[in-house]
Image (cartoon, rainbow, N blue to C red; front, side, top):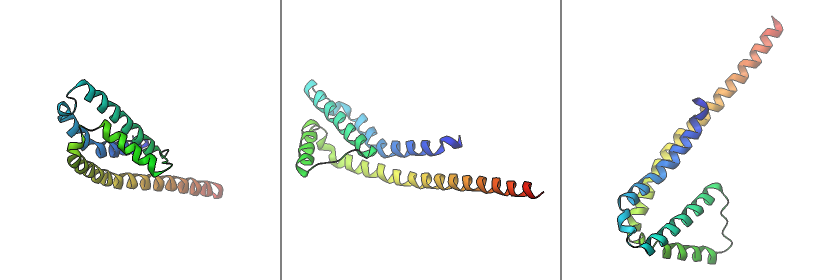
Length: 136
């Protein structure tokens, strides 16, 4: 279980950061998916936003110019027009998620430090055992 502690903490951290927004969106989904064209636009916008967030998390998102950035923002705003009315709520919930993520990152950092300390202690113990066995 110790082997999976840090990856599980990272997963928990990510889940906590998006959970408030996802819950609010899920509870109000019938407001956003009113007609078939709205469903298609919003689904396309959410997929595009998901890809952008994934690329940003992986560190692969590079914007060549501000024109591309503003074009992307325009397209996303057009596709997610039905959600823009609740942007104030979404931004607040994203802030709440980010605060929960920051709290979780404290535990991730602590787990990493414990793992490094444990590795160092094992290496030190092995060296001392080798020295003592050589002298005895």
